[in-house]
Amino acid sequence: MAGAAYRERISLGQLSGWVTSLLVVLIFGSALARADTSAVSASLDEQIGDLSSEVAALGRDVFALEEQLVYPADTRIEVYVSLSDKVGLQLDSLALSVDGEPVTSHIYSSAERDSLREGGVQRLYTGRLPLGLHTLTATLTAQAADDRFVRREARYRFHKRRDASRLELKLSSSPPKSEPVISFREWH
Image 1 (tube, rainbow, N blue to C red):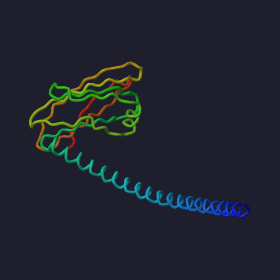
Image 2: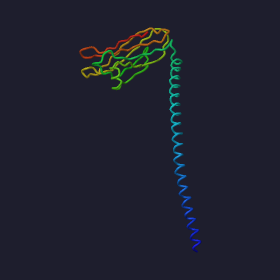
Image 3: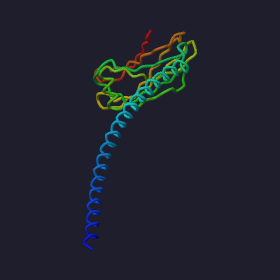
Image 4: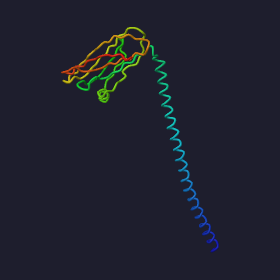
């Protein structure tokens, strides 16, 4: 019986050693696996970043090609908006019609108003027009200095030429009540 108990102790001792060895191997293997995973993960993150950059570049290229195809230079018209002064006029909305047909409208956020006040220029519209004489109508809603909401409409007749036409719609205010004034200018 003493021999059997000794064999059980030896086998329990061996088993304990094997379990300890197995735990060491598992812990060490797990650490190696984590190191490999983080290296693979870093490599994947790098590849994803590269692919994202390539997709963004392709998107810009496709947009440029689309602009050239959809709005060829000989029929393209672009209308930009700017403010000529920084005081008195709180721009609310702007609507644009070409030859009596509404083409776009925009309601301004406070951030967009601030950007225009700081000298920013907004591209309000890009479209196509045949060569010849056309009428652009701008309808503005704004808050004057005395907190009244006012609405102004202005028309501009222009001749569409073979090149792309770029028009600036310049907004200003006239003293003393800061009534809105709309003026147009062709960029060549």
